[in-house]
Structures are given as C-alpha cells and as structure tokens.
Amino acid sequence: MSTDAPATNASSPVRRLSSDQILREPLLGPLVALVLAIVIFSSVTDSFLNPQNVSLILQQSVVVGILAVGQTLIILTSGIDLSIGAIAVFGSIVLAQSAGANGPFVALGSTLLVCVLFGAINGGLVTMLRLPPFIVTLGTFTAIQAATRLLAGSETYRVEQGPLTFLGTSFRLGSFSTTYGVVAMLLVYLVVWYALSQTAWGKHVYAVGGNRQAADLSGIKSGRVLVSVYITTGVIAAIAAWAALGRIPNADPNAYQNANLESITAVVIGGTSLFGGRGGVGGTLVGTLIVGVLRNGLTQAGVDNLYQNIATGILVIVAVAVDQFARRRSQ
Image 1 (cartoon, rainbow, N blue to C red):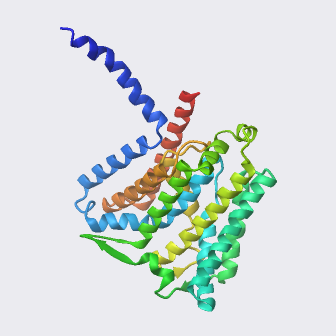
Image 2 (spheres, one colour; image 1 turned 90 degrees about the vertical axis):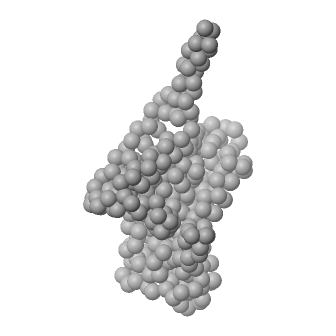
Image 3 (cartoon, rainbow, N blue to C red; image 1 turned 180 degrees about the vertical axis):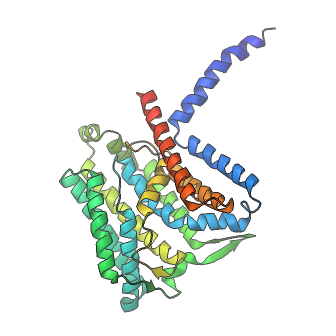
C-alpha cells in the first residue's frame, strides 16, 4: 500500500534533523546526560531520590554553581578565568573581617567593591594590553591567593549567625527543604539568562566571542563589552563569597581551592564552547547539576573520591570532543 512510501521518505529527514539538533543545541546533550545519571543512580541506590538527598545535592552545588555563571560569561567571550574562585575566597575574608568592625551591610558593600575591582583589573589587562585571558587570570589567581593568606594571616574567621549567613537559612516547600542560597543561585542564573538572551549586551557578548574582529567592524565596542563581562563576573564572585559563608560560617583562606577548575568543568559539561560564542547559562546549570549528581551518586555507591575525579575528568574530555565535532560539522 502507499502508506509505506511516506514513512520511508520521512525517516531520513527525521534522522538528519535529530542529529543536527544535537549538534546545534548545546543544551540537549547535557540534559540527556543528567537524566541518564539520575536514572542510573536512583536504580543503584535506595536513597538517591529522597527529598533530603536532592536538597543536599542542590546545596552542595550553590557556590560552584554561582561561580560557573561568571565563568560562562568569560568563556562565551572566548576567554577563561582561573581567578574567579580566588576572588570569591578573598571576598569572603573581607566580608568576615569587615563585618566585625563595620557591620554586615557595610561588609557586603566592601566585598562587592573589592570583587568588582579584581574583575575590572582582569578585564583591563585583557582589553588594553591585549593579553591572553588565561595568562592574565593565572597571574591574578596567584597574586590574589597570596593576598588572601596575607590578609587573613592564615587564620579562619568565624561568622556569627545573621545577614552574612542568611543564604544558608533553610525553608520548606511542602515536604522539600532547601536554603535561600539555592534560591540565590537560581536567581543569578535567571538574571544572566535574561541579560544574554533578551538584551543588546547579551547579543554583543556572543558576537565578541564568536568573532571579535567582525564585532569591531560591525560597530560593537568589544573592549567595553569584555570589561563589562569581567566586572559582572566580579559581582557574581561577591555573591558566591556571601553564599559560601551561608554554606559554612567560616571564612577560610584555604577554602574552595579547586573552585576555578570546578566552575570550568560545569561550563564545559554544560555545552558552552571553549572557543566562545556558543552556549549559555542554561547548559551551565545542567552541567553544575551533572557534577553534583555524579559526585553524590558515586559517594552513595561507595566509590572513592579519586575515582570520582577520574570520572569527572573523562566527562570533561568527552564534552570538549563533542564541541570540537560540532564546530567541524558547522563549518
């Protein structure tokens, strides 16, 4: 009958469309990986999907998840920021020290100014001196990390309950308990998603990351865009510093040593291209959750932390390989 012919003709375009969609939409692959990870760990362990464990995964993802938003902005402009975690840790020390002398709200303002200053320094060096972002942020990472220890005197500062630990306060949504830190993380994602997708600034960020020379020729002030991105990253690092004190009410100069790499991991797994101009914070949120789900699930399954790092590293390599393949297919 004639019903077989249309099915045969339609099958090939459908297969091509699904293949192209996976390559064009960076979010599809990470979403599939997240769903698979949830299905696997929920079948291997009995408590993985318990509301308490889901809440724990979200809470453990807050600080790196917020930092990953700033990292996404930098990577979208074809850069990379090795200093964002160090800026957040420095901000947490400033926050704790200043609160004792000036009160919590002055301390929050001081932390914001310091983190923005570091972001502006990174952006200025990248744009005015035309230095590679990797080299600039590697240098500032080393300097900021040393300055943090000098400022703290290698001591840990205890923070009293109050505004500085507010983001660690829990509340209930029915039977589900979470913290205001999780809400803050989601709000940061929502605001930056809106800025990237609905504003001219966001379009300029993608344009500069895709081809800076072409962006300049089209009238975009790429230098200003880059500086604004690094300053915005400083603001996000300040929010992460506040969230860190909500997670653990101690300002420790040695905390979050791997936050820079973990934020890059979340961004890359989330489908944002290391070559710039492709991806977004939606994928980064999924990437952050993938890392959180992977670590939590493997821990519940009794897998050693070293093997967890191996699994995460393999996942990063696979994500970059997929990005490379997608770039070749699009050329």
